[in-house]
Image (cartoon, rainbow, N blue to C red; front, top):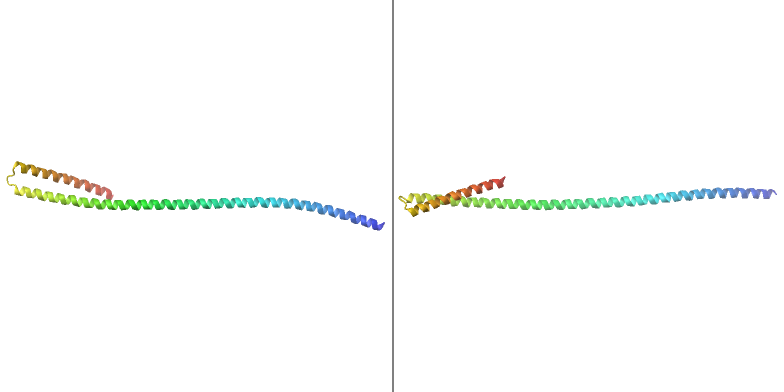
Length: 154
């Protein structure tokens, strides 16, 4: 009878321990499931943040490449325009020299013609008038070219 009572008490304690262990195991399983879900959410958030960072980095790199290309194009365009301006200025200087040379030659011819003509005839006067008009025209052209040269130098 004591043995039965001891076995009955042992079974009762065992049953109580098994129930407590079952409850604890159920709570542990619930906590484990909560932690696993939280870990999955954190992992998804980390992946999402990583993808966003990679995308932002790729966008920044693309923008930097685009800016560098735009700068290269702008520099090339500026160099081309600078070269063209230099060439045009050289051509203008050459034309001014030519016009000044022609003007000097015509003035010399006019003076020579005036010196040779003691009593010039009517056709000779017409020729001198033509030379005078040509000289005046060339002077105007030189003045215009000088003005253009000064404007392009600014």
